[in-house]
Image (cartoon, rainbow, N blue to C red; front, side):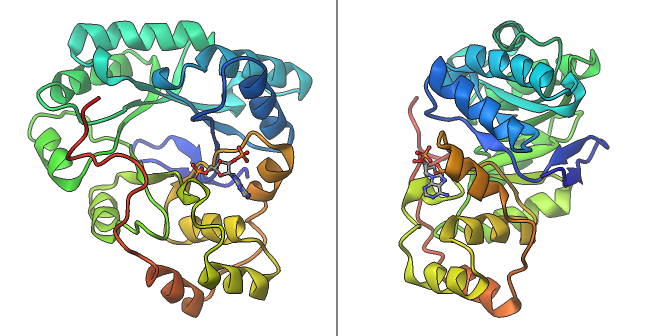
Length: 276
Ligand code: A2P
Protein backbone atom coordinates (compact mmCIF):
# COMPACT_ATOMS: atom_id res chain seq x y z
CA UNK A 1 0.00 0.00 0.00
CA UNK A 2 2.97 2.25 0.46
CA UNK A 3 4.18 1.16 -2.99
CA UNK A 4 4.44 4.19 -5.25
CA UNK A 5 4.99 5.01 -8.87
CA UNK A 6 7.08 8.05 -9.76
CA UNK A 7 5.16 10.39 -12.04
CA UNK A 8 6.75 12.29 -14.94
CA UNK A 9 7.57 15.25 -12.68
CA UNK A 10 9.18 13.16 -9.93
CA UNK A 11 6.18 13.13 -7.59
CA UNK A 12 5.45 9.75 -6.03
CA UNK A 13 1.90 8.44 -6.20
CA UNK A 14 0.60 5.30 -4.44
CA UNK A 15 -0.25 2.45 -6.84
CA UNK A 16 -3.50 1.79 -5.01
CA UNK A 17 -5.91 4.24 -3.45
CA UNK A 18 -9.49 4.54 -2.29
CA UNK A 19 -12.12 5.75 -4.75
CA UNK A 20 -15.06 7.58 -3.19
CA UNK A 21 -17.38 8.08 -6.17
CA UNK A 22 -20.91 7.44 -4.85
CA UNK A 23 -19.74 7.46 -1.24
CA UNK A 24 -22.25 9.75 0.42
CA UNK A 25 -21.19 13.05 1.94
CA UNK A 26 -21.23 12.85 5.71
CA UNK A 27 -20.91 9.75 7.83
CA UNK A 28 -20.51 7.29 4.92
CA UNK A 29 -17.56 8.94 3.22
CA UNK A 30 -15.93 10.01 6.50
CA UNK A 31 -16.06 6.47 7.79
CA UNK A 32 -14.77 4.93 4.51
CA UNK A 33 -11.79 7.28 4.28
CA UNK A 34 -10.85 6.92 7.94
CA UNK A 35 -11.17 3.14 7.72
CA UNK A 36 -8.99 3.04 4.62
CA UNK A 37 -6.24 5.19 6.12
CA UNK A 38 -6.32 3.15 9.33
CA UNK A 39 -5.73 0.06 7.19
CA UNK A 40 -2.79 1.61 5.37
CA UNK A 41 -4.29 3.39 2.35
CA UNK A 42 -2.42 6.59 1.57
CA UNK A 43 -4.27 7.85 -1.51
CA UNK A 44 -7.84 9.14 -1.78
CA UNK A 45 -9.53 9.98 -5.09
CA UNK A 46 -12.42 12.45 -4.98
CA UNK A 47 -13.89 15.10 -7.28
CA UNK A 48 -15.99 18.24 -6.99
CA UNK A 49 -18.76 16.30 -8.73
CA UNK A 50 -18.85 13.62 -6.03
CA UNK A 51 -20.16 16.17 -3.53
CA UNK A 52 -18.15 14.65 -0.73
CA UNK A 53 -14.97 16.74 -0.57
CA UNK A 54 -15.89 18.13 2.85
CA UNK A 55 -16.27 14.65 4.30
CA UNK A 56 -13.01 13.54 2.68
CA UNK A 57 -11.25 16.57 4.16
CA UNK A 58 -12.68 15.95 7.61
CA UNK A 59 -11.74 12.27 7.46
CA UNK A 60 -8.19 12.97 6.30
CA UNK A 61 -7.68 15.54 9.07
CA UNK A 62 -8.98 13.17 11.74
CA UNK A 63 -7.05 10.20 10.36
CA UNK A 64 -3.81 12.20 10.33
CA UNK A 65 -4.23 12.95 14.03
CA UNK A 66 -5.41 9.49 15.02
CA UNK A 67 -2.71 7.61 13.13
CA UNK A 68 0.22 9.89 13.83
CA UNK A 69 0.54 10.92 10.20
CA UNK A 70 1.28 14.20 8.44
CA UNK A 71 -0.55 15.85 5.55
CA UNK A 72 2.38 14.86 3.29
CA UNK A 73 1.68 11.19 3.98
CA UNK A 74 -1.68 11.34 2.19
CA UNK A 75 -2.03 11.74 -1.58
CA UNK A 76 -5.24 13.64 -2.35
CA UNK A 77 -6.73 13.85 -5.84
CA UNK A 78 -9.68 16.00 -6.88
CA UNK A 79 -11.12 17.08 -10.24
CA UNK A 80 -12.67 20.14 -11.79
CA UNK A 81 -16.25 19.52 -12.89
CA UNK A 82 -17.40 20.16 -16.47
CA UNK A 83 -19.63 23.14 -15.70
CA UNK A 84 -16.63 24.94 -14.15
CA UNK A 85 -14.32 24.45 -17.12
CA UNK A 86 -12.68 27.53 -18.63
CA UNK A 87 -9.71 29.52 -17.31
CA UNK A 88 -11.13 31.75 -14.57
CA UNK A 89 -13.82 29.32 -13.46
CA UNK A 90 -11.25 26.54 -13.07
CA UNK A 91 -9.11 28.74 -10.83
CA UNK A 92 -12.22 29.31 -8.72
CA UNK A 93 -13.12 25.63 -8.74
CA UNK A 94 -9.65 24.70 -7.53
CA UNK A 95 -9.93 27.13 -4.61
CA UNK A 96 -13.34 25.71 -3.76
CA UNK A 97 -11.90 22.17 -3.70
CA UNK A 98 -9.05 23.32 -1.44
CA UNK A 99 -11.48 25.01 0.92
CA UNK A 100 -13.88 22.05 1.06
CA UNK A 101 -11.04 19.58 1.55
CA UNK A 102 -9.62 21.97 4.14
CA UNK A 103 -6.04 21.64 2.86
CA UNK A 104 -3.57 24.16 1.52
CA UNK A 105 -2.41 22.11 -1.44
CA UNK A 106 -3.59 19.12 -3.47
CA UNK A 107 -1.41 16.29 -4.70
CA UNK A 108 -3.20 15.88 -8.01
CA UNK A 109 -5.89 17.90 -9.76
CA UNK A 110 -7.53 16.54 -12.91
CA UNK A 111 -9.79 17.76 -15.70
CA UNK A 112 -12.73 15.43 -15.09
CA UNK A 113 -13.94 15.11 -18.72
CA UNK A 114 -12.66 16.50 -22.05
CA UNK A 115 -15.34 19.14 -22.57
CA UNK A 116 -15.04 20.28 -26.19
CA UNK A 117 -13.85 23.83 -26.67
CA UNK A 118 -13.14 24.18 -22.95
CA UNK A 119 -10.46 21.78 -21.87
CA UNK A 120 -7.52 23.70 -23.29
CA UNK A 121 -8.38 26.84 -21.28
CA UNK A 122 -8.98 24.60 -18.30
CA UNK A 123 -5.53 23.11 -18.80
CA UNK A 124 -3.92 26.59 -18.84
CA UNK A 125 -5.52 27.22 -15.45
CA UNK A 126 -4.14 23.93 -14.11
CA UNK A 127 -0.69 24.88 -15.43
CA UNK A 128 -0.91 28.18 -13.54
CA UNK A 129 -1.97 26.49 -10.30
CA UNK A 130 0.83 23.96 -10.76
CA UNK A 131 3.47 26.64 -11.35
CA UNK A 132 2.28 28.45 -8.23
CA UNK A 133 2.94 25.30 -6.22
CA UNK A 134 -0.67 24.82 -5.12
CA UNK A 135 -0.80 21.32 -6.58
CA UNK A 136 2.02 18.79 -6.87
CA UNK A 137 0.84 17.30 -10.16
CA UNK A 138 -1.83 17.97 -12.76
CA UNK A 139 -3.55 15.63 -15.14
CA UNK A 140 -6.64 14.68 -17.05
CA UNK A 141 -9.40 12.12 -16.90
CA UNK A 142 -11.36 10.37 -19.63
CA UNK A 143 -9.03 11.61 -22.36
CA UNK A 144 -8.70 9.49 -25.48
CA UNK A 145 -5.62 9.62 -27.69
CA UNK A 146 -7.04 12.37 -29.90
CA UNK A 147 -7.88 14.53 -26.87
CA UNK A 148 -4.31 14.17 -25.62
CA UNK A 149 -2.84 14.96 -29.03
CA UNK A 150 -5.02 18.04 -29.24
CA UNK A 151 -3.97 19.12 -25.75
CA UNK A 152 -0.27 18.60 -26.55
CA UNK A 153 -0.52 21.10 -29.40
CA UNK A 154 -0.74 23.95 -26.86
CA UNK A 155 0.24 22.49 -23.50
CA UNK A 156 3.40 23.56 -21.70
CA UNK A 157 3.11 20.87 -19.06
CA UNK A 158 2.54 17.22 -20.03
CA UNK A 159 -0.24 15.69 -17.89
CA UNK A 160 1.16 13.47 -15.14
CA UNK A 161 -1.88 11.19 -15.05
CA UNK A 162 -4.83 10.17 -17.23
CA UNK A 163 -7.62 8.52 -15.22
CA UNK A 164 -9.94 6.44 -17.40
CA UNK A 165 -12.45 3.63 -17.14
CA UNK A 166 -10.32 0.50 -17.19
CA UNK A 167 -11.18 -3.10 -16.28
CA UNK A 168 -11.00 -6.56 -17.89
CA UNK A 169 -14.01 -5.81 -20.13
CA UNK A 170 -12.39 -2.54 -21.22
CA UNK A 171 -8.67 -3.19 -21.56
CA UNK A 172 -7.71 -0.02 -23.36
CA UNK A 173 -4.47 -1.42 -24.69
CA UNK A 174 -3.80 1.21 -27.33
CA UNK A 175 -4.57 4.04 -24.92
CA UNK A 176 -2.36 2.41 -22.27
CA UNK A 177 0.52 2.12 -24.73
CA UNK A 178 0.08 5.71 -25.92
CA UNK A 179 0.10 7.04 -22.35
CA UNK A 180 3.17 4.97 -21.52
CA UNK A 181 4.97 6.29 -24.60
CA UNK A 182 4.21 9.87 -23.53
CA UNK A 183 5.14 9.35 -19.89
CA UNK A 184 1.56 9.78 -18.67
CA UNK A 185 0.54 7.43 -15.87
CA UNK A 186 -2.74 5.66 -16.63
CA UNK A 187 -5.11 5.30 -13.67
CA UNK A 188 -8.19 3.04 -13.57
CA UNK A 189 -11.60 4.20 -12.45
CA UNK A 190 -14.23 1.53 -11.87
CA UNK A 191 -11.48 -1.10 -11.84
CA UNK A 192 -14.03 -3.69 -10.71
CA UNK A 193 -16.40 -2.79 -13.53
CA UNK A 194 -18.79 -1.41 -10.91
CA UNK A 195 -19.07 -4.89 -9.48
CA UNK A 196 -20.13 -6.46 -12.78
CA UNK A 197 -16.98 -8.56 -13.18
CA UNK A 198 -17.08 -10.27 -9.83
CA UNK A 199 -18.98 -13.34 -11.07
CA UNK A 200 -16.82 -13.89 -14.14
CA UNK A 201 -15.83 -17.58 -14.36
CA UNK A 202 -12.36 -16.99 -15.82
CA UNK A 203 -11.56 -14.55 -13.05
CA UNK A 204 -13.01 -16.89 -10.44
CA UNK A 205 -10.74 -19.70 -11.63
CA UNK A 206 -7.66 -17.48 -11.51
CA UNK A 207 -8.68 -16.28 -8.05
CA UNK A 208 -9.10 -19.84 -6.78
CA UNK A 209 -5.67 -20.77 -8.13
CA UNK A 210 -4.04 -18.02 -6.07
CA UNK A 211 -6.25 -18.28 -2.99
CA UNK A 212 -7.51 -14.77 -3.64
CA UNK A 213 -10.88 -13.30 -4.61
CA UNK A 214 -11.90 -11.84 -7.97
CA UNK A 215 -11.57 -8.24 -6.87
CA UNK A 216 -8.01 -8.91 -5.74
CA UNK A 217 -7.16 -10.57 -9.05
CA UNK A 218 -8.45 -7.58 -11.02
CA UNK A 219 -6.60 -5.07 -8.84
CA UNK A 220 -3.40 -7.12 -9.05
CA UNK A 221 -3.80 -7.18 -12.85
CA UNK A 222 -4.00 -3.37 -12.89
CA UNK A 223 -0.69 -3.15 -11.04
CA UNK A 224 1.00 -5.72 -13.27
CA UNK A 225 -0.04 -3.94 -16.46
CA UNK A 226 1.21 -0.67 -14.96
CA UNK A 227 -2.05 1.04 -14.11
CA UNK A 228 -2.71 2.90 -10.84
CA UNK A 229 -5.98 1.72 -9.36
CA UNK A 230 -8.60 3.21 -7.03
CA UNK A 231 -11.29 0.67 -6.11
CA UNK A 232 -14.31 2.16 -4.40
CA UNK A 233 -15.73 0.62 -1.29
CA UNK A 234 -17.45 1.90 1.81
CA UNK A 235 -17.33 -1.48 3.52
CA UNK A 236 -14.48 -2.18 5.93
CA UNK A 237 -14.02 -5.83 4.95
CA UNK A 238 -13.87 -4.99 1.26
CA UNK A 239 -11.64 -1.96 1.85
CA UNK A 240 -9.17 -4.31 3.56
CA UNK A 241 -9.46 -7.06 0.91
CA UNK A 242 -8.91 -4.63 -1.95
CA UNK A 243 -5.61 -3.50 -0.50
CA UNK A 244 -4.36 -7.02 0.03
CA UNK A 245 -2.88 -7.43 -3.44
CA UNK A 246 0.84 -6.99 -2.84
CA UNK A 247 1.59 -10.55 -1.79
CA UNK A 248 0.97 -12.52 -5.00
CA UNK A 249 1.78 -12.45 -8.72
CA UNK A 250 -0.36 -13.29 -11.72
CA UNK A 251 1.54 -15.45 -14.20
CA UNK A 252 1.77 -15.12 -17.98
CA UNK A 253 -1.22 -17.43 -18.57
CA UNK A 254 -3.36 -15.48 -16.11
CA UNK A 255 -2.49 -12.21 -17.83
CA UNK A 256 -3.32 -13.65 -21.25
CA UNK A 257 -6.63 -15.06 -20.00
CA UNK A 258 -7.61 -11.70 -18.51
CA UNK A 259 -6.63 -9.83 -21.66
CA UNK A 260 -8.88 -12.20 -23.64
CA UNK A 261 -11.87 -10.99 -21.60
CA UNK A 262 -11.75 -7.59 -23.28
CA UNK A 263 -14.98 -6.62 -25.03
CA UNK A 264 -14.32 -2.90 -25.41
CA UNK A 265 -17.32 -2.59 -23.13
CA UNK A 266 -17.93 0.58 -21.13
CA UNK A 267 -20.11 0.67 -18.04
CA UNK A 268 -19.62 4.41 -17.74
CA UNK A 269 -19.90 7.27 -20.21
CA UNK A 270 -18.03 7.51 -23.50
CA UNK A 271 -15.42 10.32 -23.60
CA UNK A 272 -16.35 10.93 -27.24
CA UNK A 273 -20.05 11.12 -26.57
CA UNK A 274 -21.19 12.51 -23.25
CA UNK A 275 -23.54 15.37 -22.57
CA UNK A 276 -23.06 16.49 -19.01
P1 A2P B 1 -19.22 -1.34 -1.61
O1 A2P B 1 -18.85 0.11 -1.52
O2 A2P B 1 -20.48 -1.66 -0.89
O3 A2P B 1 -18.05 -2.23 -1.20
P2 A2P B 1 -15.75 0.08 -8.91
O4 A2P B 1 -14.61 0.58 -8.05
O5 A2P B 1 -15.33 -0.75 -10.04
O6 A2P B 1 -16.70 1.20 -9.32
O7 A2P B 1 -16.62 -0.91 -8.02
C1 A2P B 1 -17.21 -0.46 -6.86
C2 A2P B 1 -18.40 -1.32 -6.52
O8 A2P B 1 -17.94 -2.63 -6.18
C3 A2P B 1 -19.13 -0.80 -5.35
O9 A2P B 1 -20.49 -1.08 -5.53
C4 A2P B 1 -18.55 -1.57 -4.16
O10 A2P B 1 -19.53 -1.69 -3.17
C5 A2P B 1 -18.22 -2.90 -4.79
N1 A2P B 1 -17.00 -3.51 -4.26
C6 A2P B 1 -15.85 -2.92 -3.95
N2 A2P B 1 -14.91 -3.81 -3.54
C7 A2P B 1 -15.51 -5.02 -3.61
C8 A2P B 1 -15.06 -6.34 -3.32
N3 A2P B 1 -13.84 -6.59 -2.87
N4 A2P B 1 -15.96 -7.35 -3.49
C9 A2P B 1 -17.21 -7.09 -3.93
N5 A2P B 1 -17.68 -5.87 -4.21
C10 A2P B 1 -16.84 -4.84 -4.07
